Length: 78
Image 1 (cartoon, rainbow, N blue to C red):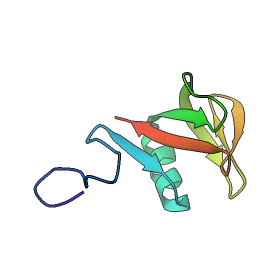
Image 2 (tube, rainbow, N blue to C red):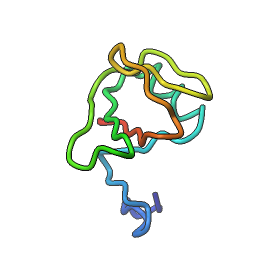
Image 3 (cartoon, one colour):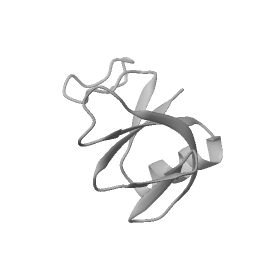
Image 4 (cartoon, rainbow, N blue to C red):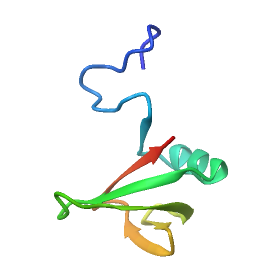
């Protein structure tokens, strides 16, 4: 995000959402116990919301379900 408080026009991320891409992003969300929205690449209209319970380079556990990190988009909901 730029200094003025506005998101970058190409980021697609608002002030209330942050995409999880790196291990550091996942670790921050894990410690904050923030709810996470998961959208699988085949889900167009629906997603899954839950607490991040664990992660590794291959998958993330959200609300007791495993999601492959390469196939999903993860977004923290503040």
